[in-house]
Image (cartoon, rainbow, N blue to C red):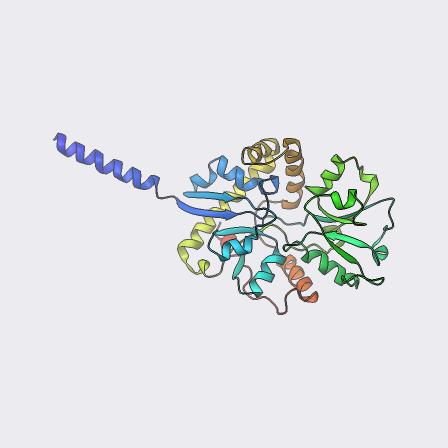
Length: 321
């Protein structure tokens, strides 16, 4: 009897051990360093939302030398956070990226110029130096310049493009007449540096109708052919959006969680969380087709991509949530 009980107990423990190791592993590659721009994912992990979904999620921070498209193409991630411009450009080059969810509904990109400088309207851009980040972040800028009919090769009838550092020094040091900022990040770095809102002329991409999709979730086309992988992505996106919903409702706690995961300057992270919430809006992760079409058209017009993308996004993941 004791032997039977012992065997039964051992078998039960084996089953429990197997269940404990049954969580599906998911590796998420972020587009940038740990900050509240990605709070929903850190919150989902910290609050156990991924674990509840049967997932073991690793969140890999990005940086200036990390291209998410290259990471996932090399097998270093299952899913990445990326901007649509970079994803479509990579797709045309053979990296089979597919947008599976779009948490950010609005773009946070802006261009700012000193109010006491030479630029007051877009008509004043000619002949001046404008700063923008590269590594895929330049596509919205180039699409906007193309829409304005301005050459980016310099000269009196175009603009000179400064390959901007990932800070606001080019404006402070007067290396550029205007620089690129994000509503949730570099804009506030300027405020911290002593600027006031009235000291700046702000060109907001979303308000001008020039916004291209930012911070979507992308997986590889071949992986999505596997039903088991697709089911894993449904769980991942659903748990991630639960994280975003919690982060938006509890911004201070979300910022603290980001800090625990490598974020810098808690006050900055709290402020960022508030601005990011405005870009996400309703946390449903559904891509708006019109926004995708606007993004693709802008890239085509600028010849960043040369042919109409096909199969570059799917609603199958969010429809199944």
